[in-house]
Each structure stands twice: as structure tokens, then as C-alpha cells.
Length: 413
Ligand code: ADP
Ligand code: ASP
Ligand code: MG
Image (cartoon, rainbow, N blue to C red):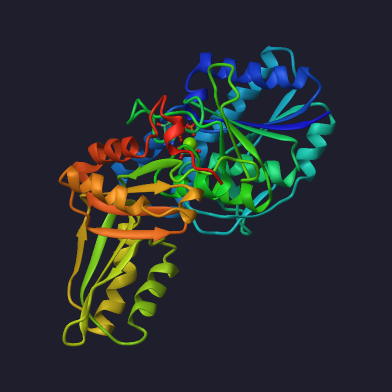
């Protein structure tokens, strides 16, 4: 008997018909003799609708109350899923994050799971029930409901698979698996059979919203291979696992991020400790900074630019205000019309010329690069937002990632 975790994303539970399909998958797994834990997201766009409701009442709603509100979406789904399973004659119980023992820190709207107490989950499984857990939510030490950041149901599923030492973890979504880039933006994109944790992690954190990046981090740390599969049809989808025996390619995929902003602080004193103070203040507001560029200094002052998520802008501004005053910096300027394009591949570290190919195709398309950042397995550029989509297509195509082009990009190991 195996223990299987199945996660159904918002589109896979968007209406009663979709819920039925998801319920039938859970029941089929149970009937074949396995223990089944099901993680569900809010139905369709429910989370967005809840956020919109709050924004109509307040421009910057209280973070604790937002978590309370957003958690409602998943709570609806778990009850409906349990009811759909009951209708098929199986036993099922729905559990909120707190009831499932998911303990988090107290950072509202981006809480991290600290520990999972599996006692209740195991008891329910042993009594022969299918257990339905609300994705995206947990509880902090003071019993406040917390949420894990957008897309957080992926993290719930992978963390539960790790805590329960599940034999299998399937993430059901609205595409056939992981593609070389978002197939909704580039129809030529190709489905990938297997992808390395590190590549998936980079793609996820660089804009491919198909998996929440935190979930991939956990999968890697606890060695939880998982499959991303279509909810609506039978397909094995994509296996996300470690690299062994995998073909190494220079570029496995391309990601586009359109929800970031570039922040520039003018006239920062070019002296030891200035950057530490600025980024220390930002980190204390729990804002993630991605690309950082410091210009060459002139007369002891310099400009400092970095990118953050657009929804983190109020917190970033708040964080910088005091430091800017104390250090005597110039103005803080924000450019929201940017896009970030990243190429990712573990084979990149062994091959040269990848950056040149990317920059050349951008140049041929008349695209000006505003910022560049690299790691061993990725290259990111920040460009003007208006050129994001066409540049994504051009970069995707130059690395031979389209359908029927498999051979071009594979390099011997
Ligand atoms: P769910 O509701 O199931 O969690 P999401 O909307 O969060 O689904 O994620 C699935 C979406 O991710 C797809 O519809 C697709 O548009 C997008 N996506 C972005 N990059 C990729 C990629 N490289 N491969 C597959 N899907 C991607
Ligand atoms: N419902 C949450 C969201 O829309 C969590 C998730 O779908 O994974 O972000
Ligand atoms: Mg998602």
C-alpha cells in the first residue's frame, strides 16, 4: 500500500464538474489500495476575488485580516471536495491547515512552514478515510491563520509529501506538464519529460508560476520527486527530480516575469555599510530583492538599482525611507514598466556562448538591456515591459526550444 499526495490547483476545482473529475481521481487512487491525501486550492479565481473585495474597502488592508480572508477560498474547496467524494460512496474528511498540523511563522501572506504535526493526518488515514487538506494555509504560534504566498498550495502538497514520507506526489494543473516556457504565451513551447530540481526552482522563482518556488525548494531539500500533470486527462506530465541520468542541456527553459519593478536610489554615499543598511532594512520587511546593480561612483556617490515584486513596493518604500534620510541619499525612483527574461539550464555551466546568443538575439530585435544578472545555471535580463512577450518568443526560439527541435539543444555530458 502506497501513500499518495494529490494536489488540485484552482482551475482543476473551478466548478462542480471539475471537482467531480478531481474527486474521481482521488477515489480511483484509494480504490487501488493506496492511502490518499488530497490538497486543494481555492476554486478558479476565488483568491483574486477575495483580495479585490478587501481592496474595495481599504487600500492597504491589515495583513492578518487578509490571511483570514484568503484562507476562506481553500476552506470552501475542501468541504466541497469531501462532499463530492462522499457522493461516490467513499469516506473522506476535510481539514484546514491548522487541523492538519501545519505550523508556520507569523509573517502574514508569506508565512513559511516551520513544522508539520502529522498525528491527526495519520489517524484519519489509518481509519480508512481520504484526507482533504486546505492548501496555502497554516497557523502560527498564536493560533492566527496564516497563508503561504500566492501559489502556496503547491508548497502545502510538497511539504505534506515530505512530512508523511509519501511514495508519490502528483500536482494536477491546467497544462500537460512543465514546458520550455509558458505555453499560453508561446504556443510552440515543448513539454519536458523530466526536469532537475534546480532548473525547476530557477524557472519557478523567475516567473514560471506553474509551481510556487518555495515548494520546489522543499522538494529538493527533502528529496521529494513529484509530477506535474494535467487535471483533465490521463498523462504522466513532467517528473521533477534530481539530475542523475538526465540529459544536460544548455537551456532547459525560459521564464518571463512581468510583475516586478525596478527601484533606483539616487546619490547613495559610496562608503562601507551603505548597501548593508539599505538591504538590511528591506529584508526586515520580508521583501525579496532580485537583481542589484550599483553604478560606478563619481565624487563619492553612486546610484543603486534593484528589482522587487510590484506587490512588495509599499513595503520596500517603507523600508528605505528612514535609511535614505539617515544616509543622506537622493530620490527613490520606481520603474514599473519592466519585464525580466531568464534562461535556465544546468548544462550552461559547462558551455560558453550561451549569454552571447541571448544578448545577440535581443540586439537583433532592437531590445535594450537595462540590467543583467547571472548564476551558474541562469542568465536574466531586465528590459522594457512592452518588449517582454516578443523577446520571450525570440529567446525561446534561438535556443531551439520549440516543438520538433529537441536535437539542437542537447549537448553531450
Ligand atoms: P494551478 O491553479 O493549478 O496552481 P497555476 O495557474 O498556478 O495553476 O499554474 C499553471 C499555469 O502556469 C499554466 O496555466 C501556465 O500558463 C503557467 N506556466 C508558466 N510557465 C510555465 C511552464 N514553463 N510550463 C507550464 N506552465 C507554465
Ligand atoms: N489560492 C491561492 C492562490 O490563488 C493558493 C494557490 O492557488 O496555490 O494563490
Ligand atoms: Mg498555482
